[in-house]
Image 1 (cartoon, rainbow, N blue to C red):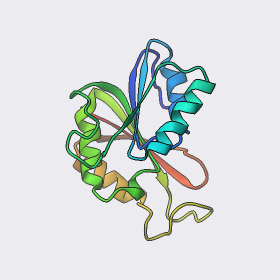
Image 2: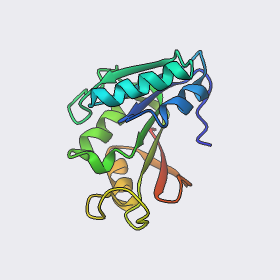
Image 3: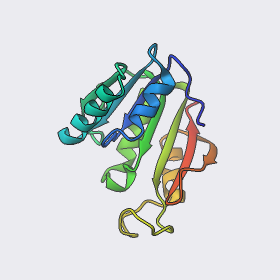
Amino acid sequence: MLGVKTGSQAADLGCGAGFYTIPLAKAVGPAGRVYAFDVRPEMLELTRSKARESHMLNIMTMRSDLERERGTNLAENAVDFVLISNTLFQTENKPALLKEAFRILKNDGELALIDWDPFNRGAGPKTDEAVSKDTAGKLAEDAGFRPVKEFDAGENHYGLLYIKL
């Protein structure tokens, strides 16, 4: 749905248990690679386990503090696609996270932001901890991204797609 291409390099910033990492790895195919980052070792182990079960050999898990400058340790302009899902609400230094996403993304690369909608209370964080769609959009634009579209990310989430020009 987001147009991730076969052979692409992708980064899942805050991969958690790999919910999106596995579909991303399938989308980029064996010629592509997905870098899955998380600060919690137990989440990276879950992602590795799911990758093994799915026979996805194109996933590289890496422990990382994404709020630290150059936190991914990837080179500038290294990836074609960045996903940040259910991570903004957990991040104290949100601008640093988006700055890192911008740094590692190639020109014309895309950023997908998926997070809990504070107005759909079926699940997720407390309302005061959730990051609204407008706030997420402002953070992305302040980091240098330009909006492309909104997309359906499910009943309790919003989805925003941005491009690095």
